[in-house]
Length: 262
Image (cartoon, rainbow, N blue to C red; front, top):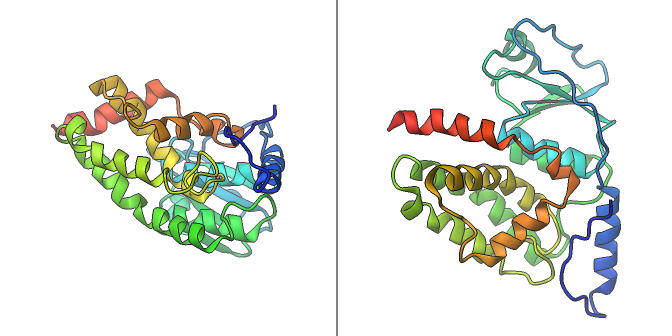
């Protein structure tokens, strides 16, 4: 299915760039894959450093989802093998022999293990073939780095609001995204075209939107048309859609995690 990333009028001045972006989007159209089974504490360890590129992940982890989306968008499903872990019953060999930090995501590549989701999406974008996910334009590049640096603050502010009154306390965080989406007018995404900035935020916005709507009846897109359009456009991208979490499971998980603390 063809996915048109840009839902706006294309002037003669930027028609070439838009045409190029549509071509990249075609390249990123989904490769339907059979997802491997989740490994728990009883599972055997896959071979280490045998030349296979492995992404140690968890299907429900938003940090790992960032790298999963990047892998999919760049068309690396055959090159980077998913190794999904059960984080509630994770194998002992993972911390002992693979990644001592014992977190996901982690990438096994060229005889080393690389971690941290923001570092990894940059690494995958820079070291593998496929459409580029960061612009060359200096102004966009600078703003993109600012957005990536702000993700931890954004997530912390929204998570903290769950312990109080999210309707009152989380608004400023979503206002930040709404204002950031106004900076460039050549597309519906943070930097105009789809980029690592969008990938860094959408796994968390996906979860926040569902949880706040279901539990607090708070619509994060109300009064934020740019944010609403951004979410709508992202949901047209197969590389992202394939990674989405089941909404019911997500709500139950967040209820147990946050409401039990109150």
